[in-house]
Length: 344
Image 1 (cartoon, rainbow, N blue to C red):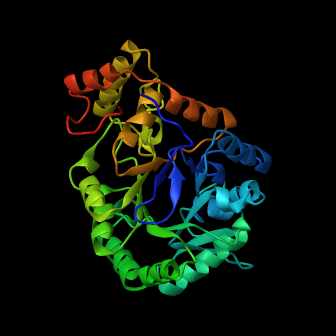
Image 2: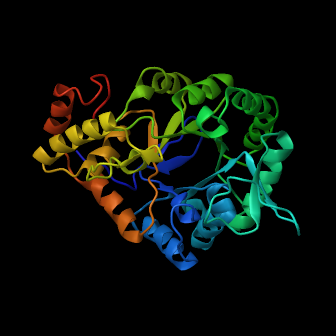
Image 3: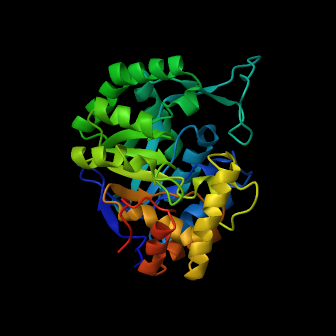
């Protein structure tokens, strides 16, 4: 079986449909690698050529640089032809004369701009106004609450504070914008299954962007989160299908997992999966991209890219027929949850 990157699935209970292959615009924001505007726009253009019509960005990616580049690439495209998502939670602030940037600022972002957390009603409205201006687009289809999880906040206390601000204040703004038709769908963009599940149960969300927690390497979301999505009619947008690089192959010592060097046990597991793929003549990355889409709750997967060739390769990997025996062998070897749906 294989997948058509341009095929579409409904995003939860909303009227929106997203392509199976989306485009994650974090890398072109500049944090991972410095690249000229023209090169970043060429990457987005290649995604369009490959049939991608779902694009995900955020004010935080490059402190505004990603939104500027995505908007430039899409602004003259037919607006009804694509779905665009961005995020709230960090409002960009221009440094005033003599003001110092806070510690921990990332390299590669727009110079002179710093992010400030703000999940309040007013913060949502201000963030979206800024996003509209950076994008140069009058409509944003999907708005996601960004990074309210332990990994991003760093402490239980700060997580609880942000969670309460979202549900007591920011959520009201998002729900109001959805009810009045300003935006088409709302959700959260998070790195953790537990935080995603908590938000899902706390509000009426259409979708959740989950980074890396339902992949060929790990299927922890299968236990509670994905069944809860099905019960509620919500969709998962899968970010990080390669788990930060380890599933892109070839698997080497020091391969990246979750933005850090992978521990030896995960290296061994990934090599076991890669060996099974090799026996069936299938690139590890192709199996990694196709596997999550077999679950009915997954609407789209949105790998990032730094070059047009990477986008074209992702599309080719989705189109590649994968024999059913590959999935059967992964199950037999204990490298795949036996309850996980498999393609075909």
